[in-house]
Image (cartoon, rainbow, N blue to C red; front, side, top):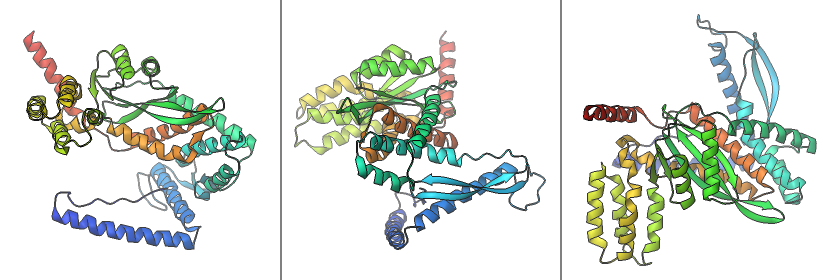
Length: 422
């Protein structure tokens, strides 16, 4: 499924606000028209998706040969040689596509593999539930609607084996690059195990390399989020070549903190300030003044560490008498949330919390809700790793996440000062 997006006017302007309101009204009207069309013609969505995918194939061929159809250009790298038919199973049904060919036979499209990888994983999870008698006729109906046709047991077995092999290669690949930034977080999924439904922790590690691109480094399943489970994940990353980590962002899970200290002692740790503010609610009465936490939140928007610390002192002086329990806790722990001020200012908003990773977790959640309860741990890990691999590929092709030049300049300046002091 593909969606079209538009850019609004600048947020702060009156014109921007009016444009957004008008755009919102037009969007709702457009969506309702689309819904009505889909109600009238159930094949319309399938036709739209098929047209989009066909255009992607044509664009890939144009890029491969360096020219459009019948275009005369000295930069041409090859020539077309007709088409062959290929079907693509999607959630809107089976698409019948015409795949272009070149005379040399060198053209290879990634559309099918990239589109179907996560689709296969979801279908496999559903079919395993059906084959094991977990969800009976309902899952079969969902699978048929999702895929456009049924799969035989032999087909499913072959698909699972091939997919598992690809995902295992992705999960165990060597990490050749240095990753100065590392973000860690976990979420829980329901998995059937020994006749009982249990929660399993999904541990995720994302790195940012020196090109400023995000990379999915590791996805593992554990019985619970603990020191041993996080230690195993970080140990496996180190064994695969993880190096150059200078800054780690996570929540305040005790086991995770301990694992970071043991496996990445050279890295600076940043406690996610969003989790910190949520934890602060435990130290406030129910009818607390909203301004108290709002002013605490503003501290994280200061330009540098000196300003932030000055605001902390002022905040404590203002609220200590009313909320002594909260203020004592903040005074003891807030320094852990200010580590991001050591980084270039351009990186502050991206690395003072785990929000970037939590948004990816929400994407995973939307997909796993379709399954609800996984038939076994392997099915759960299969789907989530497939989604992780898809995210990783999209990040590699997308615009870089961060400009790393400010960090490089900051490191050079630190080395220069160190040399002068020596």
